Amino acid sequence: MRKRVLTILSFIMQLNRSNLGLPKLLFALYMISITSASFSQQGPRELGIHFGILPTGTYNAITDVPGIKVGHLTKIEGNSIRTGVTAILPHGGNIFQQKVPAAIYVGNGFGKLAGVTQVQELGNLETPIVLTNTLSVAAGIEGTVKYSLNLPGNEQVQSVNAVVGETNDGYLNDIRGMHISVEEVLETIQSAKSGPVTQGNVGAGTGTVCFGWKGGIGTSSRKLPESLGGYTLGVLVQTNFGGNLQIGGIPVGERLGKYPFKDALEKSDGSCMIVVATDAPLSDRNLERLAKRAMMGLAKTGGIASNGSGDYVIAFSTAEGLRIPYSAKSGELMQTETLRNDDMTPLFLAVIEATEEAIINSLFAAETMEGKGGKKVEKLPTEKIIEWYK
Image (cartoon, rainbow, N blue to C red; front, side):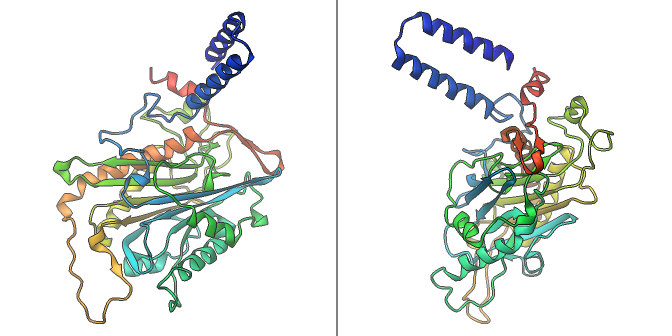
């Protein structure tokens, strides 16, 4: 950082001596600011750290899976409100009328994930997935239900299984104030879009803390070669957990002096919500097998699923041939084609790699934040870490 600042200052002095005039000088300074900001926002992959052997999708995001949309609402107000909402839509249609196969795996059940039992029982998802803070789950449920009831074709619907996940952002956020409204949840769902996904201090990751550093939202994807089906798999995480941080096999937590049970560090409790999407035609049973492997990706980053951590994985398939129609005729048989068990291994590798990278991406994208009671959580010192990989 110091070298880059000195270089920029030297360049500014040269510009000043060149008599460019104020307009051109201001433009040059603007371009410098953009370049500097883009460096600070670069992820580990752009800075030379790679995770695994499989290639990423176009955006290295969950939205690389066709049809997936993501929305964020970030709420930063005054000195103590540091929270938000993130919504993930499996496809752009009426999800209640065209449900998708899904599964949920519980790594550690210290959490308040809404809708879990029906997904486990029926093996499908019928609403967007909403992530927020622990005490705003109720608003998340109501907003998701209202969104579903208001969709054309759902006029007679009287039961909706809203899936709402959470982590506790109460260290930085005035969580007891329950500052997320039903309308804000609706807004988040309705604003969801495809394309690049903003990461770091956004949406449900606004006030989260991970490994003692600022956590947030992270995402990553993997693309299988055509010889293995050519399927895409994407992961989105809300990181708010502890452990002994490792990046690419390097014990970063130990080197930086932040790890569990060190006298100066608080206990490593927290939570992590992991959402896995794929266009591979998977049954709910194989989606659960996939979800289990996502926890291996979390473990590779040094997460330990501590006693007070709510670690959940929600996995679903967007394959159009597996959509479950709400209005199917009674007694009508469903004919589906799903991937064989023997063909699952490449997807297992993909979800481990993408989960690991998504978690680290959330840390690299997050920025230092001050919140409730003047508490401050620092950004991961990424420039120092990058030096260890040279």
